[in-house]
Image 1 (cartoon, one colour):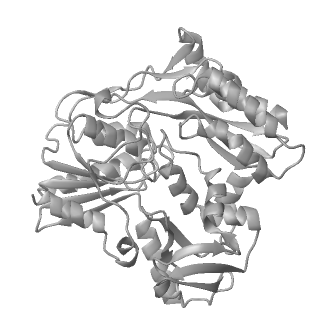
Image 2 (cartoon, helix red, strand yellow):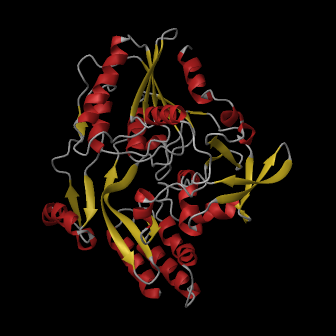
Image 3 (cartoon, helix red, strand yellow):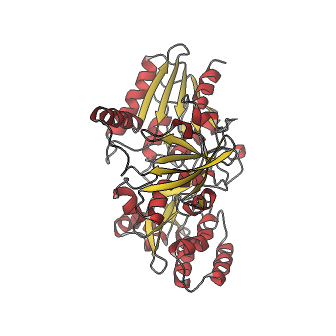
Length: 448
């Protein structure tokens, strides 16, 4: 088992862009030796993950993730009929509550605090799921916990297998109760009309770009759930984005609320397309991207071809990547010049954080919500390889590119995740009340 540990430490030290920046090589070696002392001769995959995870966590660099072998395949393709039929959310007070229900479930369960699932404390389950949550950028852990809680049904499916029912211990009105929740496989079949209505509602919810307009306030709401979508060649997405922003211009919006909550990121080219609409002068978005030379050694065969040119042309131990990438952008003709409000939370990550960081750095927007999951100064993404740890049954998704954001470094300490200008904490009323309290506050702010 020590071979897996030593292999992981070596790959991190040689190829992860955060090595030598957020943590020194000597610290990684020292941590590896400390972990090696506690490695048992035999243990489960979860137990090994707990021991090895500090190597990943100490990087403070998102996009590096650890998964049980085959978990990514199961996540994308296995049936959801035998999973926990509840959505959970963590409040700012630390309580993990039920945030959404499936059809025919008791509405009084909303905002009930979850204490145990199948006799196991919820915090222990979340701590385990956190191991496979791909981490936040910077010292903030809320982004990783957000992912862990959001993907908790999937994690339980990995560890418990198929379940027809779950024993849930809840705290409601200061009373603890235990009830049985059936998995979707055993719930009563819905009528055909209800099924069609729910499919339409789900399709609308999953749309990558949504638009709304408050005529009384002359405020447009642009909800971006991702910076990728629609098609693998990124042809339709820019057209949809352009169409939405043109609609805001057509409506003569005096304020735009850009909702980047729970936006996990996507294509960097779409960041540039969006920012061109809001900037007022030529702006630098990225500093030169770099990758360690040794990153090529651990890359997949497909990525080796991509890595070859920058590895051969780079200097001083780091090879420049993206020589043909546009780092500077010019404002769009007749771009937007009104007030801009950006909504963020712990689920805002990667491209979403880069976008919000540039807007904040150039004093182009007011940020509202909660601390983001992504870093203000830089991110580590772009090109990846999968590192197999054969003896522990784990796979590690390793990013290789350092993507520095061209922000005003004096506005936040280095390594700190993106902070909102106006903090709006998550409280129980946000779960029970179907209205979006943060969006309402943003609308009220737009009237000032």
